[in-house]
Amino acid sequence: MRLLVTRPERDGERTATALRSRGHEVVHAAVMRIEIIADAEIGGGPWSALIMTSVNALRAVEAHARRAELMGLPIGVVGERSAAAARAAGFSEVRWVGRDVGELVARIRASLRHGDHPLLYLAGEETSRDLAGDLAAGGLVTHTVVVYRAVKAERLPPPAESALAAGEIDGVLHFSRRSAEAFIDCARAAGILGRALAVPHYCLSQRVAGPLAAAGAPDVRVAARPEEAAIMALIDTKP
Image (cartoon, rainbow, N blue to C red; front, side, top):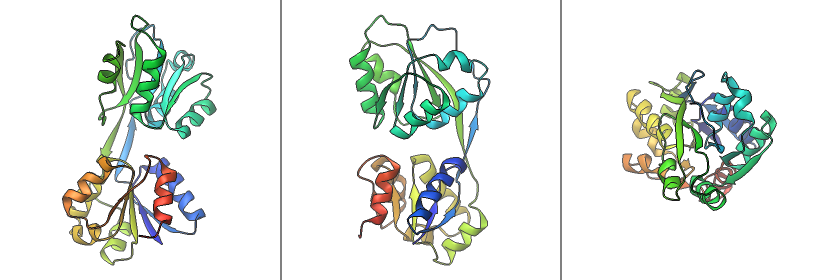
């Protein structure tokens, strides 16, 4: 299959490599650009632990002036890939790993108590869930700091536009709701929205799939679990 990957550059290249290893041809069209806010003010603490729900937050830590201090905290992350990346970066205590944000919150709430030092949550500019609110419901205080932002592209790269317009794409992979929205906007700007929506769309979750279904895409497929391996399995499954 010839597949179009919409993830930002670093994550997109990793996904493209995995797809090529399975025999697929890949067109990479990053519809979002990640900007790290390296000078984000994180406050004085002390913190009981650090929470990161995206590997982009880990990249922000690596660029931050207080990196050494943050590296000494126990952490909670979403996904085994993020946990492995954190350990490789030098975090010695990956205390909580959730398959999604809800599971991560549940594990933190089961471990910490009201009255502990606040948690430090390093987040993106836009989030899909109120993690701090969920933790507050369990009596935990969370200090949220925005350390990266995702910026939408205005157009698809020319090779991606041409391939979609010519009907040469067999499927599109989507990993976030904002990137799905950005893909739709880019296709509309190019005048190829109908063709772009007509192909199968492989989505990380129902939330990610929402904008595509609302735009009229007739074939929207959702992974069984919100992780890259589940999208790969979805692609390998006959419709």
